Amino acid sequence: QSVLTQPPSASGTPGQRVTISCSGTSSNIGSNTVNWYQQLPGAAPKLLIYSNNQRPSGVPDRFSGSKSGTSASLAISGLQSEDEADYYCAAWDDSPNGVFGGGTKLTVL
Amino acid sequence: QLQLQESGPGLVKPSETLSLTCTVSSGSISDKTSYWGWVRQPPGKGLEWIGGVFYTGKNYYNPSLKSRVAISVDTSSNQFSLTLSSVTAADTAVYYCAKSSGSWFRFFSWGQGALVTVSS
Image 1 (cartoon, rainbow over the protein chains, first blue to last red):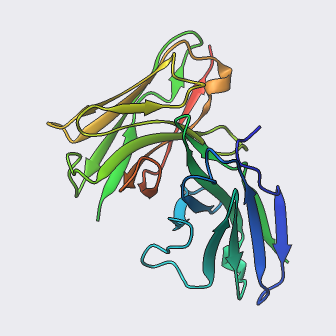
Image 2 (cartoon, rainbow over the protein chains, first blue to last red):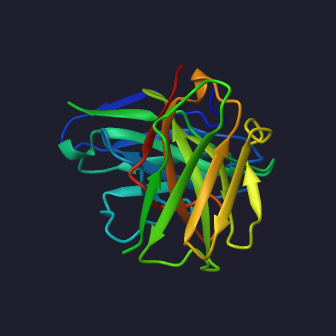
């Protein structure tokens, strides 16, 4: 059971906009920033969004993040076939501990 | 560009100690804005943070693993290491080393991962 809650799956068609939610508590998302990772099959995770809504260099602006209270979301616009991957939210917890969501498998139909 | 490479045994017997080393290249492990961490992923499952270390030796560990984990840094070799004691089959996973910038849990760079299987 992961500390952060994500839907196990999401899907969309090419060109569509999809969002992935991440729910936490006051001790993690509520008081710290959220990061998002993309993991392609057989590869190491890759940082997609940090500090709630910042993109590392090289990440397309099709990817965006937001946070409100104890929840966060990742949005992917102009969905492409290469976006098919697992997506994880993550946040520091004040316990202290680093916590991940359980992951969302995105399927491009 | 910074690179990280995990190394260590791919097979560990139950009740023994898992040891992995991460070698950092094209960057300094003594960088004052970097924090070095370990994350694992059991086959077919999600990511789990194991813990991290700063170049001074300061650590944070996942509370669920804290009694069995130690992460250390060797600045002379530009490496940091993970030991996990009393392993069971539940510790079978791909183990990633990673670099976090600016805080303990924001991993901009990752190693390719090392599969460690716990089996007799």
